[in-house]
Image 1: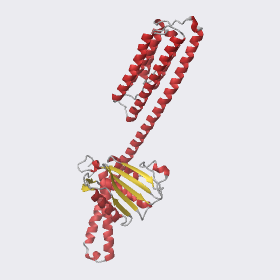
Image 2: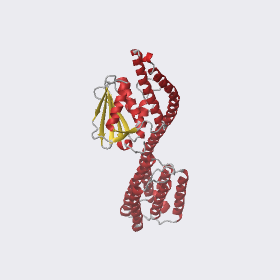
Image 3: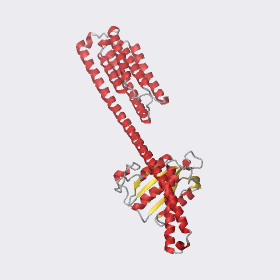
Image 4: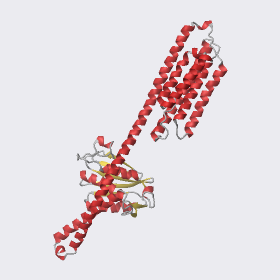
Length: 437
């Protein structure tokens, strides 16, 4: 009278499946303890209350065997890496064997608790694959047929009452026990399965997001290659113009030329970042530095390209440590800063802190904040509060860059006004010589 774990097909085990298996194994152990208690109560009632002579020693040995099986299951579950369909089938067969032994010692086929075989078959249909379910049915059918030929008769004394009424009462108790155990177990197993399905849905969503990344990466990489040639041509032309005295003699034209060169360098930096993010030109633009130097250079570059007075940097990281200046990470931080700049033109704060072995970057603004429904969707593609078609990819790309580095990203609205985006980055992945370089 027990249940067991739900097991995925061999070769198709996921972390979510393993968690479901262990939850269902816990249900198996709970239900087996319930069965042991029920069997002790039933044996005591029949022997003491009805006065029927039962073979207490053999029946007690069966009950002790179930207790030992439960204790062994606890130890087995602790050290078992994965639970297979075969393990589940063996567990249910052992329960059938224990039930058959108790029925054999207490009347065989005439025992009204033979209906508990249906509990084993139902659990097998819920938890096993098709082939194993039919194997369990064959075992139960064989045990049932064997009981019709071999069993120890259950002799009730005349004082126990009408045998027909006792049989009806026994069938009623057996039916009620079957119904209660099935409802309790199937309800819990379905809850576990829903949790597993939710986990698998999250994995599918993650796979879809990764597919978006691949397709956008290919598109961005192709566009970056195409832009490389015209940008190089413009750079050559601007260099030629700068060497022309008649152009440099005009102050306004010279200033415009300087702004154009700054903008061109920014475009070339963006193209380089795209190629690095796509896995090309690996190592270009990456160089040894420290946390403080990386933040200072990042802030200066962003201020030169956007606004010199908007960004306020607060570095409370503490003792400086060497890291690699990663172009992809810099582009990701620029993306967050650019998003904040769109809604907060006059004030943005970048705070750098250390939390154990992590670099924590908090970017705050004084904009309208994130809509409440977006806070739970941060990092998913096409989740944007700006109302632009195809928008919402910025934080999605940032999320995946940070995830690749082993970090995490969170967002929250501030109490008064504005929002804060926090990037948590392990220093080990930013250190010189780490495998992500």
